[in-house]
Image (tube, rainbow, N blue to C red; front, side, top):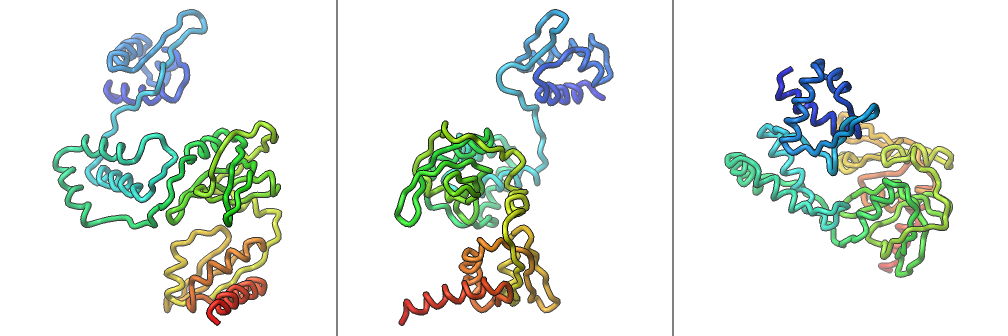
Length: 314
């Protein structure tokens, strides 16, 4: 291993460790302690803030913020990262302190001139189209922090023109179709609910409700865990070719799309009965491109909603 490569890997290693000793580094990189001491002196000269402690339990530690080693990108990697950051412009609220525009400018200005020219030419030729976020959400950072640190919050939540206080413990936050959502445990309902973040009007810490342990639940596995004890039923929906194309952008757990050779298909899987009203409204958006076959409750719920719409035009 060359010295330059060893120094680069040493920066990444000391970033991962809170404390380390010369002996540990020597064993890790297969060199002498004297060589490691010289390397540490060079790291210090490069600006890595190292602090040493003497004695039998002494060692080194990195002070303040961790230092990231230089990262080299290929031209294709640099362009793809730029456009990934550029796509965030559709969200006027993000759960980060620094706005995406600041990050995008810093990244752009540090690229070489020819790569900047490539990006300039591509900006009018390629785009990622999303639903534009309409509402500014000032509490995203607090909601994300509460999910990470497993804190209980009291939120003021607005639905149908009414505002109520809810105590919740968040699983996480996610963005979908221009809106932010936070699936959470609601102490008022004593069950799990998904809250629209733009309807949250205030946030404060709840010191009264004893926190429940949600450390094993995250955004990826929440459906399989939370629906484990809920009453479920089988879903079967026939789709035209256009219906298949519409559903292909959906990723629902336990529901699978099967395509036929002619482009049509069907979806099949298990759903929670409490989601029937939501699914009724969802499949109505397919119009004649979806025919619900099962369950019977979903068919009746969909007919009821359609009859209400028809009555509005009588």
